[in-house]
Length: 221
Image (cartoon, rainbow, N blue to C red; front, side):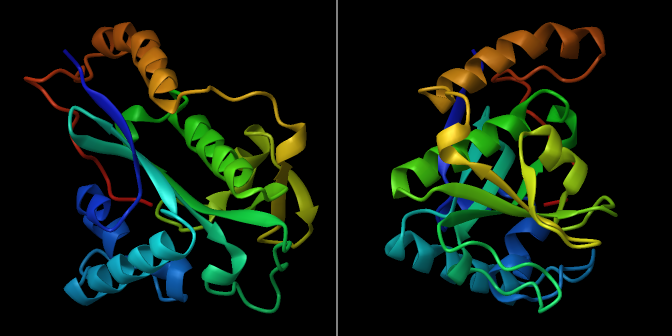
């Protein structure tokens, strides 16, 4: 039987992320994204400390989705003041917003709706914290491995341009105007698995099961 679990992104959960994601402090401290050979124990320790601090201050700064004990997707979010600035040329987020910094989905599980579930998790958290919106910077020239989310994908998921910028517009979803999200993210993941399992089997992709866990792919945040 396939097991699935949606967990809080706390310091311990970082162990399940791809090494480059677990070591990257681009959003947390404004550091460079690790190169293939740039993953360091120091970077991982720094990120763990940041996540632990945010967990104490405001609650875990994200969510992770596990299938058969493998992390297949995660989202990182925090108040704007907890994230490193994007520079004077990039729009400043609103004080009433929770910032969705980045997401990552294991390549095998892309195009199946997990990204949308992660956006919904951020919206639920914004609602819990009683803030009015979720905002995110988009990248109009996104390439695989970037830490800033594709602007086109954010538009597809319901964001609108809130503050314009040639490369990195600030995008926003007003929590009050969103459609109702699933009461249980666990239930939503279970329903998604039931929909995509036949497709995975037809395409020859590994189907999650206790005997054959989801394989971890490229480590793009």
